[in-house]
Amino acid sequence: MSKESSYVPDRCINFMGLCAPAAVFLAVIVLVTGSAVGKPVKEGTPITTKLKMSRVLLSVSADPEFIKRLTDRALARLKKSGLTPAASDADGDAFLILTLKMRAIEGCAGKIMYINHLELVEEVSVARNPDLRVEATTWFLGPGLPSIRERLSIEQLERDVDWYIDRFIVLYKSGND
Image (tube, rainbow, N blue to C red; front, side):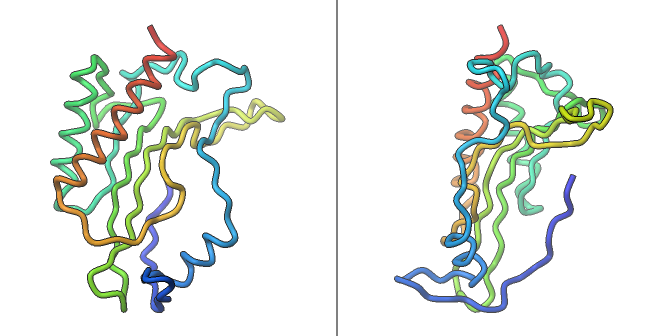
């Protein structure tokens, strides 16, 4: 998996009441994000078809003081719906990665950059060379770009856990009986 960046923006731009790093404004101007990654080759086939939940490892990326609580909540929600991911010390075929990160913005008092999304990462074969296998995000749910906002409480983060996990449950069940 990719390493986390330790980049801290050093300049903020105040635009229409929003305080954000210049890079965020540039990204908004330059990027046009889609709502999904990993569209199945065969239309109508959910991306989770034949995915075995017992071989999926759950990982929650959040501020250290929240990781255990948010991970426990996500696991409980999955298990309540009948889905049991692989144990954290087991081998897996895929990773379900929930990211709920808050980063302070230097020069923007009281504001944070909130990075939130859920992604399914799997080892896949490249069509042009089936012997070439790479880790790739096969499904993604989230805004695509960080948002600038006030710091979130643990309760707000828990609501985001519920929202993301509930959507994954629906997706998973649409592809598996």
